[in-house]
Image (cartoon, rainbow, N blue to C red; front, side):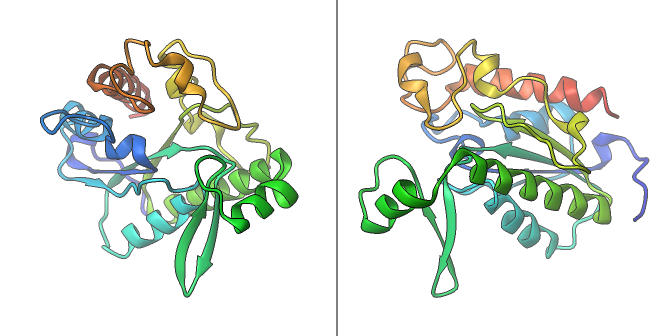
Length: 219
């Protein structure tokens, strides 16, 4: 792969993940952390490839689709969501099972009979190995931030130096939880209120600031 030696200001920026990088619950005039990071890094173009409610292994699909645009010189930021969410396919269309909200028979069966922490972390580790390999092959600079988990990235070959040392909720001073999004307890948190489950503008600014400093340290 071609080595990238140009400054970040001459590169593109792409963000991948779920509703957090989309900026769900922000006001129309407010900006999600990817847009704010794009401004701070002064990157050429910004691509928000995140999808509402997606899974960790959805990141592989998002990156693969983005790579078909044949864009070179890119910084990629991957937001790691709840590992319990399950990606499956129905009529060639990706579908998601989530541990909260959905009471379907399939959801009850999966979370009652199949799902386990060990399976979740196995899938998460495989996904990161795939993302890092894909980015390496393309010459992309890849960085990773966990939302509200502390997953053990244990499989040989995963470069853990590309992960921010704190999850997003740790930045907010909130406890992390590996299974369900326990932010309901933190709806008075200054980085979340008046929102329900997603960062407010100040929260997105804090994530963008920490991402910026982490990425600049790797320039």
